[in-house]
Image (cartoon, rainbow, N blue to C red):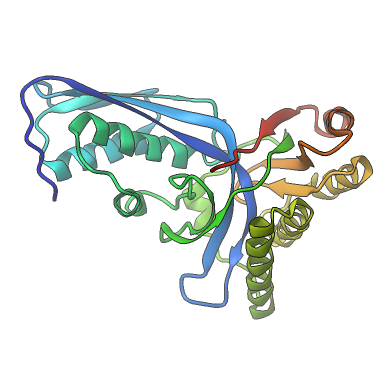
Length: 297
């Protein structure tokens, strides 16, 4: 436990965390604790603001349904020996239950905001330890594309950064509970696990080389393999649209309802490809949202 010396005055901390558009790759490796994913950070954020109230005993959160973030804030206050409670407010541009890491972003932003208010250290590993007590978590606390063990909440490897891509996204509707999804038995065979290991090796090298074409191929293969676990009716039509417009590949929220076509933002003809993909996706599913990936230095 870290004990912080608090004076009886309010203090405020603010922090943000980005979301992801699903995962470039997600599956199970042929090893213990083999469940893993590879993140695709996008320019959508959750922002947490926490006001420490030493003279008030309770912690409250708004919106009121952000119960996981409320639990996390209370855990950190208790571990730090902080007197009183606080008011937590979360503002997010990430839709919930779609496979875009909305809950993970809420929690990471909350951990950092509470720590900022307390003046307490909050390194990556400490955040992981807290989040492991709450739910399976995406690797959005790292400013990079990472391979991450989401069920045990630990970093496997930092893979690096990629040139900007545009994601033409659709939503098949409904919502998926992350905890319930990750409790499902995985129907993957030993051969599937070996294939996931090969795909992880391929995308590791592709990110290092900034090879967007290979990244798109791996994402599409991962999406197809995930059909055994959570079928998406729009996957094959999306792959056909991607091929027709000259996209890189199709990325999905493996534990969500989102699918997207990856486009190279800097490629010649990008604007035309984007318009064509958006029109075809609108005709397919009736909704289209454009996302932009994050690049890191």
